[in-house]
Image (tube, rainbow, N blue to C red):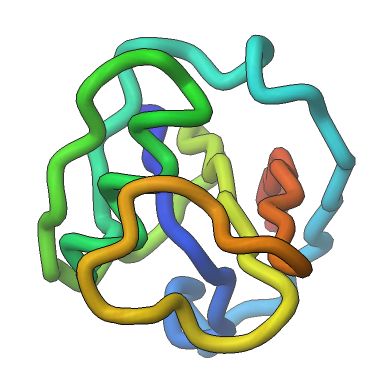
Length: 103
C-alpha cells in the first residue's frame, strides 16, 4: 500500500520488533497517484495538491506501516502554514521523501 503524510513518526511502526528504515529524497513527480492520504490538515493537503497537480484529501487517520507499504512524506519546512493556505508562502518549502520499512 502507498500512503502520503506530511510527517514520519515512530508510532507508524510496530515497535515490538526491530526495523530498518530507509528515507530517500524524491521529486514530486515520483509520488504515485494511488497514495492513500493520511495528511490531517486541510491546508497542508491543499498545498500538496497544488504542488502535485492532483487532489490530495485531508484525512486524519493513524497508519501502521508494514514491509509491503511505502510512505511518501511531504515534509513542510519554514514554519506553520498560515490558515487558509493553498500555495506555499514565501520562505516555505515542501521536501518529498520516500520511506520504506524492513523488519
